[in-house]
Image 1 (cartoon, rainbow, N blue to C red):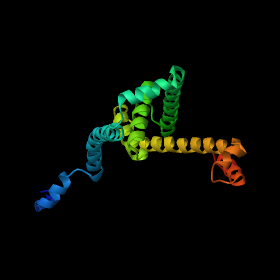
Image 2: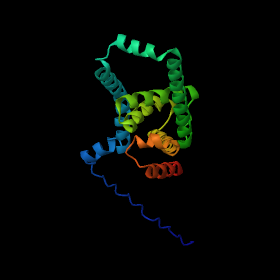
Image 3: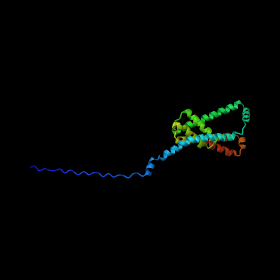
Image 4: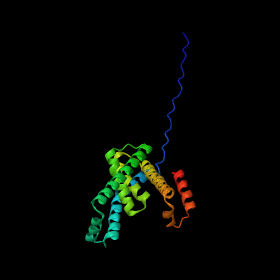
Length: 212
C-alpha cells in the first residue's frame, strides 16, 4: 500500500464585520448645508435684484426734492433766452460726453477680461453714470447698477468692480488734466479773481498735468 498524504487546508475564518455607529445628526446637517461661497453668491444675487430698483426710486425722489419747486414755464422762458443754437450745442456736448464715458466703459470692461456687446456697453454706461451722478456715492451706486445690468452677459462681480474702479480713475485723470490746463492757460486777470497766487496756480497746474 502506498502511503496516503492528507492535505491540510488552511482554516478559513469569517471576518468580523464591525458596525459603525450612525453619524451624529449635527454632522449630517453640516454636510447638507451649502458652502459659505454659495450662500454669499445667493445673497449677492438677491442684493443685485433689490438694490437697483431701490436706487432708481431714490434717484426719482432726489430729483423731485431738488426740482419740484421750479416752474416749468420759468425754466422754458430761461431756456428760450439761451437761443436754439446754444441749446443744440449743449445737447450735442452732452451726447458726446456720454459717448466718451461709454468708450471708457468699454475699455474698462475689456481690461477686466469681460466681453459685452457694444450696444449693451453704451446702455450700461449711460444708466450707471446718469443715476450715480444724480444720487451721489458714485462708486457704490454705479457698481450696483453695472453688476445688475451686466449679469446677463456673464460679467462677474470682480470684473464689475474693476470696470468701476477703471472709470473712476479715468475720471480723475481727466479732471486733473482739465484743471491743470485751466490753471496754466488762465490769464493773470482771471487768476486775480481767485484767491490763488499766480505762481502757486502755475505750479499747481503743471503738477496736475504731469500727474495726468
